[in-house]
Length: 74
Length: 364
Image (cartoon, rainbow over all chains, first blue to last red; front, side, top):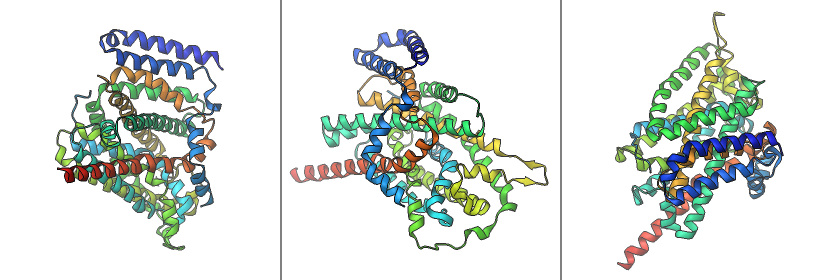
């Protein structure tokens, strides 16, 4: 966990909310909800040391392992 | 959601830059690893995937005119499975955007700015792309209309300047071990041809719908032609060394030397890479943002562009600590992920839709 990155992302998220607030206020609830979910996701991810965290890449590597072995055997 | 309209010619230019920009630099090296001196044959086999994808996309958009891909999913596979498929596609597009941003940054880092932190390169490009995405599809269309001639012209000039250095003997022996090595080499380039799947997101916004197929086909032929020419040039200059090179076209460009005066043309290639990658990242970014909007039936995609930007930057780092891991991942996972998501699932949807049509016809 790197606090520097986390605080940078928080500042960016704050700036995005400030910048978009006027426009997002006029949109329906569903849009607002999606907007904040995406920001929340970004904020949560910034808590981790991403390069060494298992993620979608690891998942895909597990799914496609037999094919990966086939490619290595070529 | 998107009110802009583009012409089918602009669509062709967008697709050409999207596919060719990254392909011309990285693909010849990977292809040569499997195909040896037959690497120029591999794009021909790989283009079959492109033609198939184009056919599937065209049939789907003909069966469901003016509908988004996510609506097609729901119409064919049912609401629940359709929504799930939509979610998978949104994740896939965001993930691919992250990968493209990372490969762009890695190139700039290794070739041009070795001292700069990678996050600076990634963030600057993502911010630039975000502004273009907010501009909408028309802006992307015009951007590629401006960049397309520059791209073609520069590559043409470099190829002309390289002519004195070509060793045509490197081409021989053709098909030394039969057809198999060139088929193996086609496994990687087919990802790029599969990217014609993105047409399904652009087709509803065409101002001249009936010309979409024509320009799609022309774009595939142009991509195929450029692919073969680039592979041949690389082969004629580097010969057997192509296989071990990360960016063979860049290395080939270093051989330009006319009268000790016109030389060191590699900045042109770097400029082309930045220019093409910008269009590619923008298109994928745009499609992801639009996809989120269409998937959840929202009113506009523009508010999600900036939050998505942070996610794309994070996705470009996630589980990818260094270049070795990235290259291994690109060679073992991407080809299969590409063909499944870009060709097989749309083919399945097309199959379901045509069966549904027949069943309905029988009922009536």
